[in-house]
Structures are given as structure tokens and as C-alpha cells.
Image (cartoon, rainbow, N blue to C red; front, side):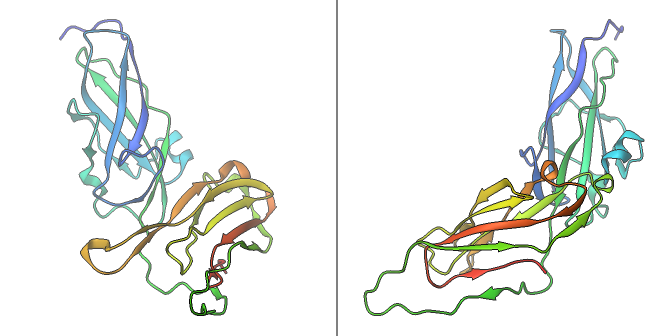
Length: 244
């Protein structure tokens, strides 16, 4: 088809598994984006997705995965066969997409977005446990337990860091109550949350606890950093975990 002056804009609203910041991503991930054009009779006919492990690698066109041009009008639920065997678990990846329209015009690459791959736990997680206090007869659990914990100071070189991600959840032994937490990075309130339990996980009798991941890149600083948490537990039987 004859080319025309391009009104084709870079794709936006990038999503992995329909999430702006996806984690637990594996090889079956699906990618989506919005197409934009100032022309009414313009539509996508091809796309190209590139993926790198560092944001600077995208800028330098140093790609770990490059789909090349794929003939397709799809911009949702797009799967990438090249992911198989190329994703490392518990890693941050950055990706961009560009498209070609039916007049042969090529858009700029989208702004980079990131996702985190799934982590498979291979060893038990150890923690500091409070005593297992038993209720007497019809005694109610005691409310209002709060703990403050803080990490040792640790040093970071921000020039070597693209993204800083915290994985966190809280869970007590009284499933009818919520154990919430507030996490602070260098004194800044970063995240607030609690665990997300799912009973009868995968059709079995076990209860899965879904953790959350938070982007705290804007809260870290060059040099010494510290992470602290205020944890509220509605039960005297609780556990507090802190990474070594």
C-alpha cells in the first residue's frame, strides 16, 4: 500500500499478564499495549518486542530477546516463544515494543516497562518466632500487638541499580484476623499491605500465601540505606521475619 505522512505514535500502556508491574512472570507470559495513530484509516500490521536485563541495555540496543518483526494485528494476549529457556528466575527484565502500520510507517519504541520473573523456593524460610501462647477456654485473642523491626545499614551504589524491589507479606496464625504492616525505606513510607491467602490452593488442602512486590527505586539513596517495618498483629501467636 502507498505510504503516507505518518501519524503513528509510540505504543503506550504496556502490560504483562494485564499488570503494569508484573511479577511471578514465567515463559507463558502475555504482553499487551495500546496503539496510537492520528489517522483514522491506520492500523497495526506488525510488531517488534525487545527485552533486556538492564535499562541501559535497551538504550544501547543490546537485547537478550528480540522477536524481530512479527506479522500480526494483535496488541493483547501476545505470547513470545523466544522466552522459553531464556528467563532467569527472580530477575528484573525491561521491555519495549514498536509497531508498523498498514502504510508501512514504523513507530518509535515505547517507553520501557519492567517485570519480575517467578521465584521458586528451594529452601525453608527461617524466622524469629514468638512463643506459642494458647488461649484458655473461651478467651479471646489479645488485640493491638505491634512490633518494630529494622534492618542493619547496607550500602548501595545507585549508579549500578536500575530498580529496587522489595518482596513482603505478613501472616499470623489467626486466619480470621488481618496482620498488616507498614514498610519504610530510609524513613519514607514505602508500602502498606498484608498477606493474601487462598484456601485449597491448586485443588489441595493447603493454603497459599500470596506475597507482594513493591518498587522502591525512588526511596533508595547512594551510600547507606536502612529498611524498617511496623507490624501489627491481632494475635499473641505471631511470627516476625527479617532477611539475614
